[in-house]
Length: 246
Image (cartoon, rainbow, N blue to C red; front, side, top):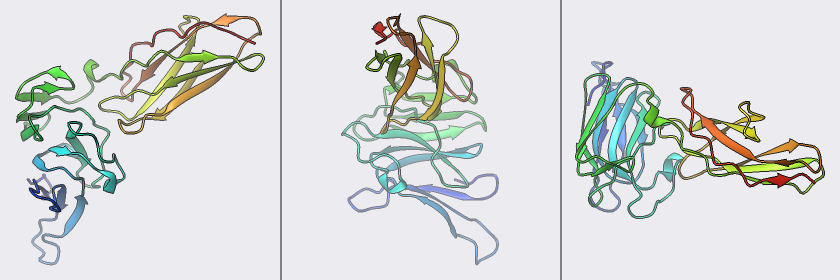
C-alpha cells in the first residue's frame, strides 16, 4: 500500500508463534541509501489482514490482542481482540479511533478500500460496534451522532464532612475520542456546577470525583454527561440517589 507521498505500508498475518504480525511503514525513494528505510513499526500481537490509507491515517483490520509493547492495551480475553485500529501514517502513533467488529474465529475485517474520504471494509464479521452488520461496513468522514460518547453510569453522592458532598462517577468510552469533557449538574439544573476533562480508553477507565460545597441539612441529586472534541454530547446519566449534607 502506497500513500500520496510514495511511502509504503505493510501488514503481516504472522501465522505461527513468534512471527511478526503487526504493521510497518518504509520509504520508497530513488535514492538507494533511503529506499526501503523503515519509518516506523507497530509491534502489536494479532495478525493483520488488511491496511488502507485514508487522509493522514493508516487503518488496519486485524485481531490485535496484545499491544503492551506499544504502551497500549495488554493481553485481552479470548474474543475481545481489536479488529479495527488506526495509526498516524507518518508518526506511527495510535489514533483515538476505537470502533470494533466481532469475528468468526480470530479474523474480522479481511479487506479494506477507500474512495479518498470513506473507509470500506469487508470480512467475516456479523456486528459493528455491537450492532448487526454482516460482511460489509462503511465509515464516513467527520463526526456523526452515532459516535457520541456513551451515557455515563449513575453517579454516587455522599457527605461525610460538614457542608461537603463528594460526587463520583466512572468515565465513559467514545469510539473516536479518548479525551472527553464531563459536566456535573445539581438537582436537575441546566447549568453545570463542575466541568473536568479526562482520558479514557477501554483498558483503562478512570473514576472521577467532585467536591460540592452546600449548606448542611440540604438534600441534593446529581447527573453527569460527556462531551467529545466534536461537540457531540452523551445522554445524561440517571440522577444519583439523594444525599443530605452533613
